[in-house]
Every structure is written in structure tokens, then in C-alpha cells.
Amino acid sequence: MTVHLSFRSASLLALAMTSSVAGLTHATTAHAESNADSFTRMEIHATGTTQAPPDKLSASFRVESQNQNAASAQTSVNALVKKATDEAAQNADIKATVLQYSVYENRPDKAKPYWTASQSLSLSATDGKNLLPLAGQLQAQGLILEGLSWSLSDEKRQALFLEAEKKAVVELKKQADTLACALGLHVARFTQVSVSDTAYPHPMPMMLRAAAAPSDSIGISPSSTAENQTVRADLRATVLLSP
Image (cartoon, rainbow, N blue to C red; front, side, top):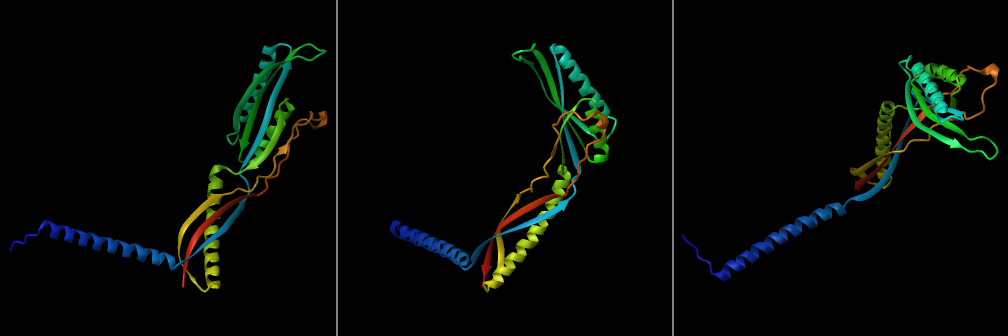
């Protein structure tokens, strides 16, 4: 059987179908909005922390030489830096990094001009027993020890941050359940969780930019205490509560 529709009839049918689909869409949207409105939203925050001794000691040196001849000043600095890096290379635990180099002329008012050459050098190790004796030797050779500081290596810090995150999650869930119970509700689900890494300040490095040591103390190793480092993870979450 063949059914023929006039243009007017086809238009009315299309309009009816469109209205029906629109009505269905509106109903679905309204149902979703109704479901969302049935929850109580709550924003919460929790923190997890973990501590561990640092595994990296860094020593910052400045090598400096002054001479009325620029070449002589630079030669002296170059020789001291090479000797220091050669001595550091004898211990596999010590890593040497040679940094900024500068040379400039000084023109005092009532004295002859002279040149100053200087270069910075950083040494790091996982064990102070390896680095501190060498630091004392380099001080005796004329290098200026400007600072000592303990820190966490990237690998250890990442592992500690993961532990801090786990503690923060446990605290976050506990907080959500406790508050929900107090409100006479229960936790339906977490809809959003964000994590931030907020490190506690490291212990202040021991600054050693001082005058040369007395002759009876030359060669004595400097001291530095490896205090525990704290790693902190902050979590913020949106929680949906239902009756």
C-alpha cells in the first residue's frame, strides 16, 4: 500500500517529530539537572606530610685571584679549579660542576690598577663523610667556601611526595565521611581532586664567606648537620553528598 502525503501534511509531521525530540531532550536535560540539584556540594582540603633525612650535600666554592697582569690572575684561577676538580674526581660519590667565570679590572684611587679573576665551583655528594674532608682541603688550598647545604635528590623527593599524597588521600576521605555524617548525609562521590606540592623550607645553608682561617686550623674539615627534610602534598576536592 502506498501512502501519499501532501506538502502540508509532511510539514505538520516533521514539526510534530521535531517537537517530540525537543521535548525528549528537554526532559533528559531537566532530569540530569534535577539529579545534580539533589546533591549537596562540599569543598574540602587535606594535607599529607612525610619526613626523611636528606641524601645530597652541596658545597659552593669561589676561586679568586688578583694580579696586576690579567693573564696571571686567570692562570692562577684556572690552576686552582683544575686541581680541585681532579681531587674531586678521585671519589666516585662526588660530582663537580664548574660554573660562572669572570675577570675584571680594578682601579683604586691611590693604588695601581689590578685584575681580579674568579670562578665558582659546586661539589655535591650523597655522603658528608666524602665531601666534608675534601672541602677542608680545598679551603686550605685557597678556595673560598661560601656555603654548605643539605637537600633531597629528585628521586628521593618524588618517592616522599608519593607517600605524602597517600596520607593526604586518607585524610581527605576521613574528612569527607566525618563532615557528611555530621550533616546527616553520606558521600556519593568525589567529582574533582587537585594536588599541589608545597615544600617546607629547606634548612638554611651554613654561609661561610669569612676571613681566612687561622694557621693552626688550616685543613680542618667544616661541619654540617643533615636535618630531616619535610615533603608536603596538598589536596583539594569537590565532594557530592546525598541523603
